[in-house]
Image 1 (cartoon, helix red, strand yellow):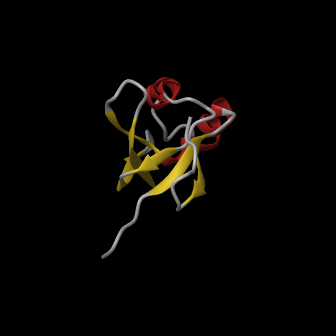
Image 2 (tube, one colour; image 1 turned 90 degrees about the vertical axis):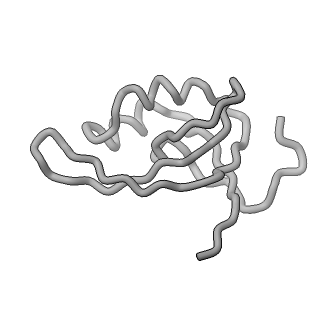
Image 3 (tube, helix red, strand yellow; image 1 turned 90 degrees about the horizontal axis):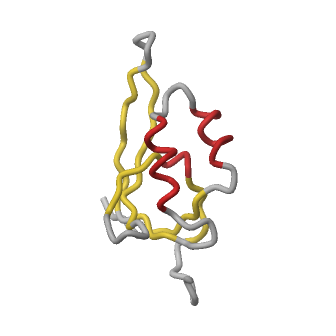
Amino acid sequence: MQTNIFYVRIKENLEKAFKDFFPHMSSNYLKMAKLFKKDKLYPVLAIERVTVINKDGTETESSRFLIPSENSNFLWIQSELFMFVDVNPPESNH
């Protein structure tokens, strides 16, 4: 399999993104999302497929992105909090 880096931006309305996927998403991901600037593009360095076990025992498929954060750490964070921007690096990335 061949992979390529692509770029994403944090969604404008994080509360809506959380509610759209709730109750499957941990509220900790919403707190982690505040580590990203809304006007900046981030490279997705890896994707991890995850199976979330719901409170009722059913399963929901999702994925997490490995993205560098503003505090110079790499974070695995729910993909539902981001929107796709492009596969090419931006000319100017704040």
